[in-house]
Amino acid sequence: MADITVIGSNMIDLTAYVDRMPIEGETIEAPEFSMGFGGKGANQAIAAARLGSDVNFITMVGNDDFGKQQLANYESSGIRTDGIGIGHQASGVAPIFVDPTSDNRILIIKGANKELTPAVLDEKVDLIKNSKLIVLQQEIALETNYHAIDLGVKYGVPVLLNPAPANEDLNIDYVSKVAFFTPNETELATLTGMPTNNLDEIKLAADNLIQRGVGNLIITLGSKGALWVTEGHSEIVAGMKVKAVDTTGAGDSFIGSFSHYYAAGEDVPTALQHANQYAAMTVTKKGTQKSYPTKEELTDMLV
Ligand code: ATP
Image (cartoon, rainbow, N blue to C red; front, side):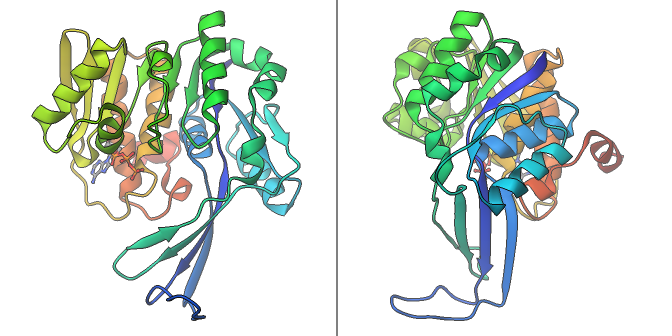
């Protein structure tokens, strides 16, 4: 029995560091390039696995070199790969341009991720029903997430839905069926149509979701940490003060580590405190998955 089943996307990030963005019709040379493993589902699975969770990852890769590299990456992080399917389309990729001011332009080509359908989940149902927590994001079809939530309800497995990237088509009826709903401030604004520019506004928008049946609402607040809201209770779990170098992937490291600590038996505020600590450590290093420490590395970083 695995601790956590992550159902979601995987991508290969193809990052070109440019002196300036090319204009229409122009070809320019970029001084630097880097390739990295990404995709919100993959990032969250990797964070939980590096902390020691037994993780199933249900995703689809292409029948190509990138797909093989993805599989090797999961195997080397100890993730179970029996939930990973090989699709007909190419592996998902994200070409990214970053300029010296950190301004970026990103394309997402989902490829095989689009083949992660509700029917695929039915084939993997034994993996899903024998886990302690199901973790979802929104880089796959909403219908697939809805089916995952229904399976969680059917088999009594709590579900965490991280509504990133924001999608205003998300059916709020499904949100009331999950144990944890975890938007950032921007996603909260998209979902409620309410402003979230300060803590008072965030609390009002949070209350709107609680009234619509959301159980545990966890709103990430960047360096300030996270706000945990339940019916009649709200509490800020403060972030850790660190010198941030690169916050890319901080949100995914927070969700993956929270899932790990919660599935390991911690209560919600303690798991949030530990997730703040883990995510803070990742922003002190460059890269996405490259910045996610293992349990041992985390211990060394915290002394
Ligand atoms: P992203 O989309 O950049 O991955 P996000 O908007 O989903 O991130 P954030 O709220 O920015 O999520 O960050 C998630 C968590 O990461 C925060 O709740 C906090 O624990 C940690 N974090 C982010 N930025 C910082 C920072 N500068 N210092 C300390 N902790 C941080």
